[in-house]
Length: 210
Image (cartoon, rainbow, N blue to C red; front, side, top):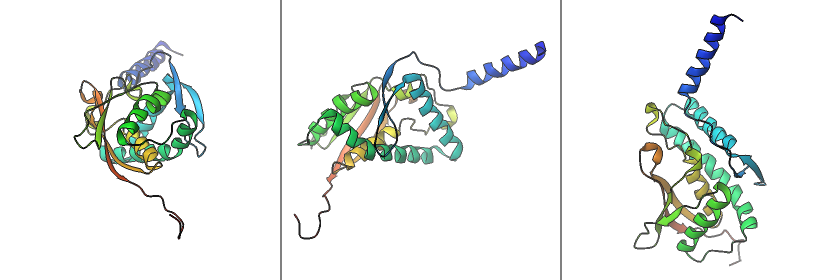
């Protein structure tokens, strides 16, 4: 291969690397849920976790015309994960039924996030009625070494997490509204996810049973 061809190949690689929003993080491990009906788990390297999620978001940005549609798809994917993951979570954590929303918040932060993402968010900013709170993430593994391009300012990069929370809680008869209100990718000091209790979902019982 000629020197000119080599220089061309090297220049192309450097250009691709410069425009890539994802860099390789240092090795670290945690459990990543595999998307399947059985909600089986696979121990995955964090580089693969970050790169796989980054590739997913990148592909969605190519498939959909605007950030709002991408956000909806991430939420939908997360919801489908959540409705499957809850069974595995309950089996592995041995957590019993929560008596109120505050207890639910503690389980989400101290058990669920720790189990699947290796982090423990802070639970704060409770509403006076006790039906709304925030999860503060000092470190979000999904956004390690990620930068949002200027043309995707409306993208909620980690919106998958909102869907997971919504789907999982729905499976335990809790309807919630969940959204990002702060995001370090958009210049905020912390990442904040806001959860609001909407209603208790009544189980559909067969006719004649209570």
